Image (cartoon, rainbow, N blue to C red; front, side):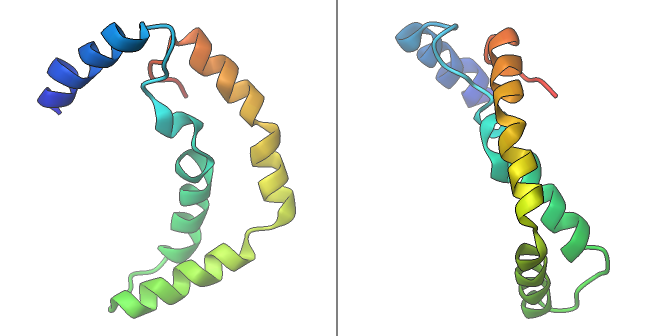
Length: 93
């Protein structure tokens, strides 16, 4: 983390300007800000004894995500973009 804060972030700020890039890319990736939490809630509700069991649970949870859930995630995206801009690329909820 030190290398990220001491080297990468200042380099990117110098190269792109602080206002021109969004450091918190995870905040704008639907897999990170929404889908993984859905998968985790469903697939990890109970402990798994094997990796294969976890894989099966994740696949089942993935297949249970509805089109309505995906549409809601997509509809929320402009709000997330605005929050990212207001946070100047920093962290936001």
